[in-house]
Length: 168
Image (cartoon, rainbow, N blue to C red):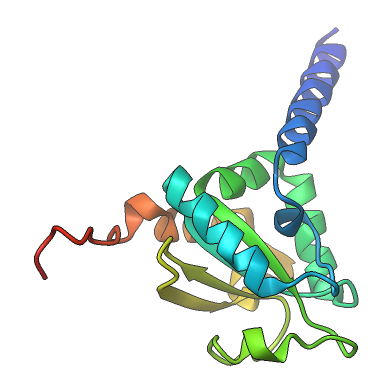
């Protein structure tokens, strides 16, 4: 009976995660070489402003084995996935041999490997450039490292952007 109860809770939680996933913008869930990262970034900034979140820009692609491992890790940890998407607007930007998105990438600090993440505020100010290898522990993504990262760079943990009425 206990096993059935745990199974049902897991299934119900998985369905609630999937339901929440449907409300996410396409650019928050998938790498797509055909998308315009400038248009997606403009939309992400508007969503971040209206929802009071920072933006997590994730650079990678469908060819990237570590990007797939990171996505699989987040899929296996639905609470972390929900926490990430509730505290950040995630913007996935595809880079590949057929579309390097050079113009968009010129505006960002250099990437040393993939996936690579940046955190910006809702005004587009860059707060962090992060090698995702820092989220690994013994060659696997770490729940603890991810939670620390999410908590450290969310809006409430970093200085919120000043409004134009505040003095410098």
